[in-house]
Image (tube, rainbow, N blue to C red; front, side, top):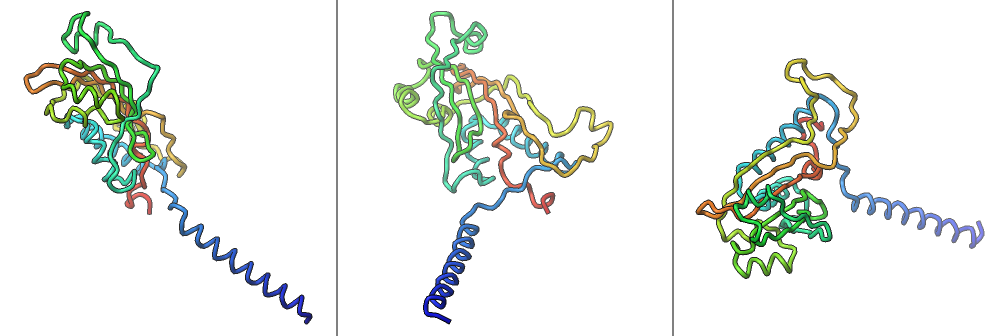
Length: 236
């Protein structure tokens, strides 16, 4: 065998080894593929149970921000220690109409500020919210923070120890067909559930400890709240 042939074989072997090693490293670094919510009856029931669990958590706590903090951490939707931040959506202001003024118990001359945000944990948008609030009911520091930062509203006004009055709560989507509780569940193929962009809508008013309203909210929760691995009992 010629010296050139020997060298070529060695080079080819080293190249092949390098390719194998590079492939193994790439696979090791690649995030695990997340199991999908399936169309099977069992998976559909569990998806609804999870969605209703979030719904109840949101309805039973004054701050949606802090509830989403806990949801994000419990379901590992972002790196450990991540907190909800508010991405401001500008240029889409919605003036307070008569209904909003009635909810906030103010007349036509009272200043009502508006803030539209996307609440984000890591790289996932968990909700979008319209918020009409009364700057006069907040401290100067709170107003400054809301105007100049991406802090979520609930975190900015947490010191007020506010309460929440829920006006409505809608499931915008259900994994189960209407009448399933009477007709039973129909077995589908084992494809993946197709989720709409928004799953839950809440309308609420935040109040000071003396019952004075200071914020009216419309919150729409996205499909990303279910963007975590399917529980093992149905994924195995």
